[in-house]
Every structure is written in C-alpha cells, then in structure tokens.
Amino acid sequence: MNSSVFLTGMLTGLSLIMAIGAQNAFVLRQGLRGEHVLAVCLTCAISDAILILLGVTSFGQIAQLLPWLAPAMRYAGAAFLIWYGAKSMKAALQSTEALIVGTERKAGGLAKTLTACLAITWLNPHVYLDTVVLLGTISTRFVGETGSFAAGAVSGSFLFFFSLGYGSAWLRPTFAKPSAWRILEAIIAIVMWAIAAKLVLGV
Image (cartoon, rainbow, N blue to C red; front, top):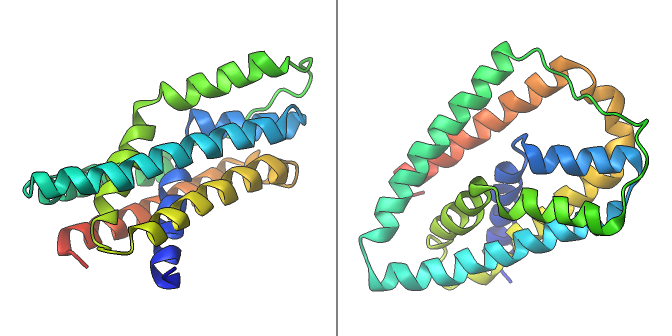
C-alpha cells in the first residue's frame, strides 16, 4: 500500500463527494432526525465503493485498449471540474440559502428510507461522472498503484458519509447559516480547480 497514493485518492474522493447535492442533503437530514443513520450511511458508502472500483478497474483496462481515451477524458474531466468549480464559486458569492430541516416529521420506515436513498444515489448522473469517469481517469496516473488510490477514495467516501450522518447534530446550527454554505462552496471551487489544473498539466 502506497500511503502517498492512498492519501491522494482519499483527498480526491472527498473533494468530489463534498459537493452539496441531493444525496448529501438526504444523509444530513436523516442524521439530524436520527432516522436509520447507520443504514443510510452504509448504503451511500457501499454504493460509492462499487462505482469507484468499477471506474478504477474498468476505466484503466479500456484506456489500454483505446490509448486516446485517457487523454480525452482527462481534458474533458478538467473542463467539467472548471465548470463545476465556477458553479460552486458563483454559489459562494451569491447564495443566500440555508439548510432547512424539518424535524417535526414522523420517522419513516427503513424500507422506504433506503428506497429513497438508493434512488437519490443511483439515479443521479453526477455520481457516475464523479466515481467512474473522473476517479477512473485520475487513477490511470498511478500505474501499479491503482489499488492504493481506490482504497483511499473508498475510505474517503466512508469517512465522509459517516461523519456527515453522525456529525450532523453538531453541524445543524452551523449550516443553518447561509455563510457556512458559502464558505464550503468556495472551498469546493478551489479544490475542483486545483484538480483540473493537475489533470491538464499531468502532474
């Protein structure tokens, strides 16, 4: 296990998954309500792990058969990250939204909650771009060390979802403020642009 590559995979995975979206908001809300937190966190993290492994293993093999694919996807991924970063920075500068969580609702059943969680996760096209395409593309930079990269990315996913789910009670007063979301969006933008630069420069 290459610790440097493992850390790169973890930080890359965390930077991609931290983007505010339906899945993260769902996990956060479940955590704030204290409803099926373990099941929801496991579902999201295991789903991510499956997609990350698919991207790291399959994308590298396909890239070997089609040598032009990795460079093309690297620049396409960089373009997407630049756009994504710009979107996050715009939200950081203009957004006035705060997290609104209704804690007065009755707890939903486990099956209904997991069905919603799976739908939000697997029917979201961005999750495939983040895990299969982007992480798969970045992993091709680490020839012979893709296992370490994948392990880092998967670990980052588990770390994020469980921290979000179980740490949400502490986060609630913070993210009730629009300024907290703006700061997070700004951080996400900077990280996205940094990853895009590395993809373009091949470093």
